[in-house]
Image (cartoon, rainbow, N blue to C red; front, top):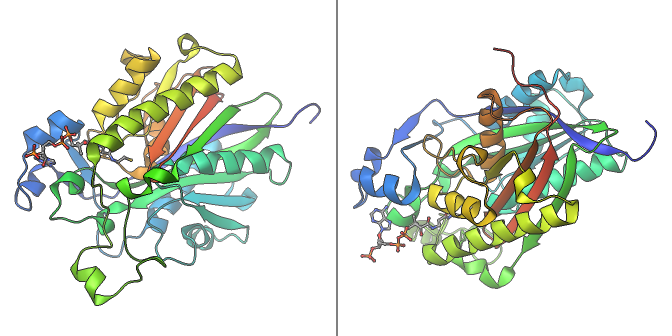
Length: 335
Ligand SMILES: CC(C)(COP(=O)(O)OP(=O)(O)OC[C@H]1O[C@@H](n2cnc3c(N)ncnc32)[C@H](O)[C@@H]1OP(=O)(O)O)[C@@H](O)C(=O)NCCC(=O)NCCS
């Protein structure tokens, strides 16, 4: 390869657990309704893993699926990066379990930037390719959030789902990955968190009884506002530094947290209608997995056109956020 070395997305894949949980399931657990959940979030259903099904199982399925799409043999993978806040165990990394399940011996590690994890994982994977340290990188976003939910807290339990998505990155002479913007603000760390299970609050009988190992969001409205503001501004910054405008974007894929958040981001950017992917209805918020799942589903539905400009943007606990701009080179799927 002559000239600068770039990274390109050459395949996508995703995996959802078989079990579908519709909104009425929560009506017996908390005071809520299907109508409230649909109106306020756009979510109708989500997938929950079954007992014995772990994050690395979903991640391995998504990675295998992405490698098949890319036509790349698993043996060619040089690095596995898995973005997750729900690895099978605190250690080892979920990525290492994926490596073992794929029968590989390459480096493998996790990235945790909560719901912004896929943006961070993509920047790491891209750096491996651009620097010449790897020829083939699999970047995965995978979560089993149903195991970190407080099923008595109506403001959080209805939002999240389980799943995994993955992309395969390979070197290219023209940029597939055009650029990335990342951001974080630890001043707001306590508005979205899992309080226990780390060094600040180790697991104890008390933490379990108090449900301190579950996701807490004491100020959902503030999370909502910050999500809209940071995703829109990360996208603007990235477009400007890459020499594009919103008009050039063929497809916007925001973190699939809530349809109202995504519509507000699309409105602020002036990227509405068919140009914005809102695919939360059947999947829910799958945190680090949401963007690669939405990307894969959009590609399989024929919405990601070869040669198109694709803008991905994420936001989550940290607070942390990011945006990635892609020139899409993979042909549409055969029909
Ligand atoms: C959680 C969220 C959907 C709540 O919607 P909202 O319109 O902001 O609602 P509010 O928080 O103002 O709550 C309004 C009322 O609905 C109630 N409510 C919250 N969850 C409810 C539920 N599942 N069912 C019924 N009522 C609910 C609240 O208790 C509140 O009642 P009150 O007025 O008696 O106090 C919204 O804040 C949100 O999406 N925040 C961001 C969440 C997110 O995406 N987090 C992850 C980011 S990665």
